[in-house]
Image (cartoon, rainbow, N blue to C red; front, side, top):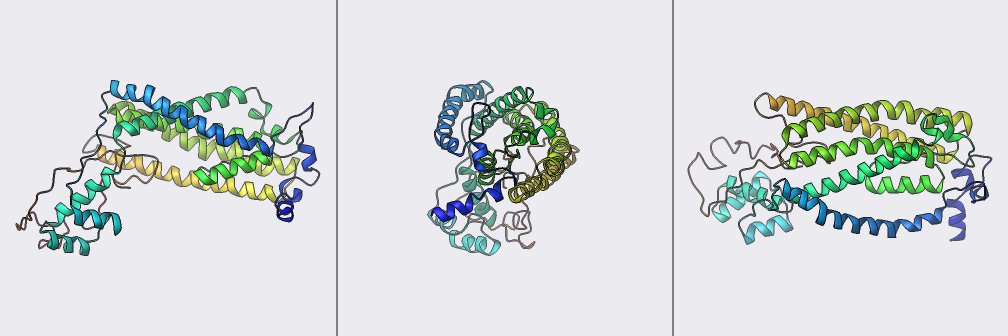
Length: 363
């Protein structure tokens, strides 16, 4: 085990050629991030979780009630043992062949069975009230973190001159913010251990700015404040694209790729972290494409109806929820044999339900 640890913490991988772990020990003159500080992450995470529960229960929920957001969730599907078994044990999205088999077995028409599966899937989704509370928590958290970051960074020289990130370097500052859960946590941990905290603060602050607006837009959407929702989404799209396709590569990647090369030089972990930041830039480009696509869909829909960027069919960006516009009327008990209502009519079921057309609330 000692040999594995020695190999993993090899100084020549993590640090510039003239720096050792001994140089990162705290002294009276300088303080550096220490790996053992990360043990505090677990109790801090628990504290934040408890704060969230209190916030959602005593602050967000009353606000939602004041905005007349209903606590009831989607309509529940009619109890049916056969369909429930298929749903839980086989598939939540039955294909046309299985639908026809179930139709014959239950003596229900195909459309009714499709509606049952749709309602059953919706049962597992949180109510609008729960989503509002979650968005309000995220909005408050991101707003606080962003404000704190700006207040902290405005006192630092590297906010205005990114080259300052690499001077007085008993080690390099390079942020690792990979924007998705496990990868994000891993990158932040590595950046902390590797003392790349200066650029890290810049990247985190930059990313938090747009997150505030999207959560505010979702709150407005849940509260049915459509004009405010549209405005906030437009502001979010502009800020997201300008910050992550403009500021991020020009300000962040420029210093991590070129300025750091000139001052501290490349080394193995330098390559790893820069590759991760470049990967993050690729994700920014992809998400920006999806946001523009979402806005274009919404504008296109606006030609014949209301313009709602958070309510488009099969939104591609996972963090934007849409509302349900489905027909949730209860299914009839018996099958109707009329060709007008039978999903397997002379059009071979191509009635908008069997051709893979997504429903507004399915992701």
